[in-house]
Length: 309
Image (cartoon, one colour):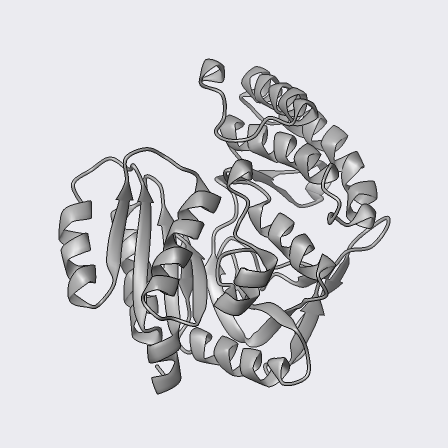
């Protein structure tokens, strides 16, 4: 850990019903790289919170247990407020299923400092690798009809992109002050995409940092597609509700990329077909997705309706 990171960077982790062993692995990996870690737990069950909270407090961090599940975005905002109140200048957002490699934060911070000398930078993020995949994921420029995937050619490269996944993203607090907090109304899905669009609309740039790497798990499972054409990232019915509802909420926002909307519309039909016909539980998936579309058209925000469960 660099001395600068020790005094300026606070890691903000959000958890919900985590695997304690995986969470401890994440904490062991990130704690030496930052000044403090604040963990916001969304009303998880189990007895792991108290001993973990005591250990974090001894290291200068904190466990902020929520009485109810407030969602990813609201929890991130709680952690960001904690970092601001304790004098940190950057926040590193992390999901419970991520694990930064050694030196990730130092690489992100070095890139942020270098790029900020000539650009208005909202955030920088690492390249990530889902261990179920054969290679690191690319960074993305939004295009029509398809996005442009940008792969790292060497470790010294920084890549301008149109959005960053929230986990692993390093954000200066002064950029958050100008762009605004995460949209708590979205609750969980597309929170990172919406904030990225908002930052880009205000003239900020986002960069992927090839020297910074992180392991990250996308989706609950994988489902093979027909004819060996690849694998489908599978999410549970409740997550499908948010995916459908929130994309419609994003369509209504003035700062959302019109190009993204045009190329996203076919994905609505594709998801209805894939998860309503191909991937089970099909009837339950379809019910949640259709309700998500209806609620998105009505502008409903917040948690998934209790009457769906």
